[in-house]
Length: 318
Image 1 (tube, helix red, strand yellow):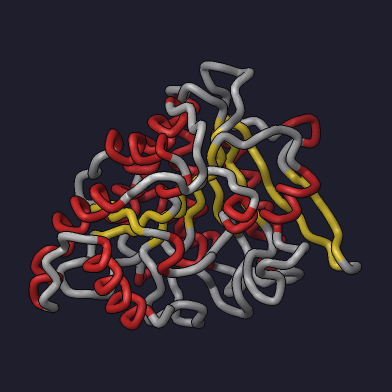
Image 2 (cartoon, rainbow, N blue to C red):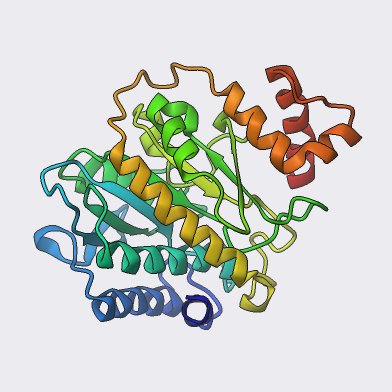
């Protein structure tokens, strides 16, 4: 898997930019479709892979594929990663790494289907100036292209790098578990993949950061996977050789398990209607216990989580 991840990231970052309307943006879309075809993952619905739309005279294209599941009638899980960049940058971590992981997981789910169908969504126009606007690919999908309920979106952004804090390099943050009690069960069952520590935390600590936004504001269960910002965020230095591909393999393995477990959960609500503190504390103690102790935080209460969240927000400039 690691060599294919390297190959996909290199190909997607090679044009130097995937800014909406650029040649690299079009090349990335063609590459995604070629990879999906080579894997044998069919397009989504009657329209196939490309779902064009227009907002304010500007053309955009979302890319969708669908992996069959055991229960064809059940609402699908969605794996999402945006394929545009914020200006003229190669975007290896933002967001080629996530696209490569989505392709890897899609291939594994095709070989061994989950309980539900899984949509692979490569959204357009996630970055400014389109972020949170009607042109944002995920917003347009939810409001205009979606033909069915989505069981749960699992959205990835910035998942290719080590967390830049000593002792936390192998951490991946997970928000949205608070959106449905069934997601806590899915996260528990997914456990930790070898080489990755998945640390759940509340979305309110960071605010809406990516394509899960439209699902959250419509009170739909969601999960967001990220390694947070780092020094190469939205910079020309976001290049493929800086990524940790072994960590990406572990994230792909974890995501596959998380998709399967999420597909098994009924997700009946209530939306944001239960206390996630015990599981957050358990995972924080495992991942950041020594660091918390250094800051004098015993990690015994929500207040302790609030305080360590402020420390991390300052570190990541959120």
